[in-house]
Length: 312
Image 1 (cartoon, rainbow, N blue to C red):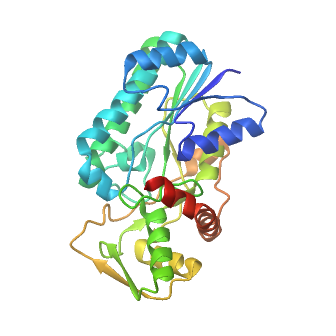
Image 2: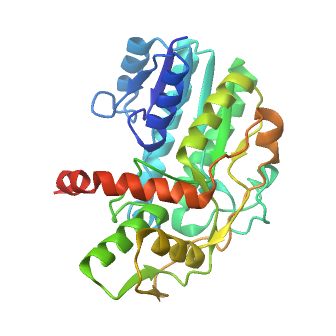
């Protein structure tokens, strides 16, 4: 099968490519330097080059709370434009199936816990990442509309916060797990007595190991053809305070953790209802949080010097 993976060199995309190759597939990997997915002409050229039958649209512009606060317009425009172009070009090229990936940030700020897919439209997302979340949520409407009008087989998955090897460890753009790992390792190695973290540590988050997410996306492409969105996660939550303590233990940072309550902490709670994924995909996350964090720390330690050199 001719398979196209947009964002195939990125954090999640590279893992999906690995899963596909392990299954004997040879996906076409679209890289930003070759195809700017915000540009409709570049997307047309990409589809002409790849001639895909199956498309995983995984390209995105993402970041943590700080990056979302600094780039609300950019994140709204880039993610919406890339998704719209992927959707329309898939229609025009007669793609057999398109896999779209949403975001946990699309859920309303006050969604009842656990988050159920039917609650996705029950309010406005948490303000610090709302533009990104709204852009991604709009693509679900597009997917369902294209299915209704054109008979397109478009499926839509909602992963929870991802982490793992090959994550973004740049503190200007990183999410919470890689940021904690880097801050605590830097503090440990510098002999610092404390680290300062954003918020008050009370918000909770759910984390899905990136390799598990990649397996779920490939499962969905093989097994699911429905219009309804599907949550991908573990169904377990942890407070940021407890997460920081766990990362400190794994990295060997023995100092104190202080909290900057003048900085935002984001949505108060996040935990998904993952029963639909288990029922429709047969998917259940396999990697416990501690094991996944240990693998992520080990990967970062191995590539730390290379990443620091590349950032200069």
